[in-house]
Length: 220
Image (cartoon, rainbow, N blue to C red; front, side, top):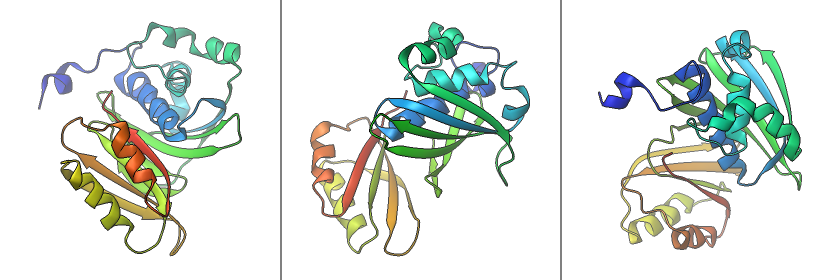
């Protein structure tokens, strides 16, 4: 256990789970879209659905989607700021089967029509877990540098990507692979030691045949 686990995160808002964690879920969704969103549809489950207005979860999620971090004082006015920049946000209380009580499913759309659907849970102390991306099961915490690669589900993809990462002296300590169907679209996430995720590595992975997107998640 570290000091963060005891005292919680530096944050704006009354609840590390309902505000700080919610900001981080929104921010991870923004990173996974990899561009500014103009539309967000947010489905809220469990206690998020029951108390999202009173605990500021709606403002926190909106803030994260706009790129704010948990200690940003603008979180209080994030819904107004969203209107000012042309970001349309809708909230829908719902039930998500087998989900953690503090769960949000966020569907983001950018100006060109690109979308991403991200399901994430706030698991306490401001910590989060992203559990689904576009319906595919993942497990991403954002607590360590993570490389996310979207690619065609074809032979040799894992070997090609991990060989590149080894050539950059990166140690992969956790790996996850999900796919929508055999031969369809797959997502691999690779958590690595250290913080050496540079643009040259990203460009190298993007050149691998079959790769359609590469996203770096750096600790926030």
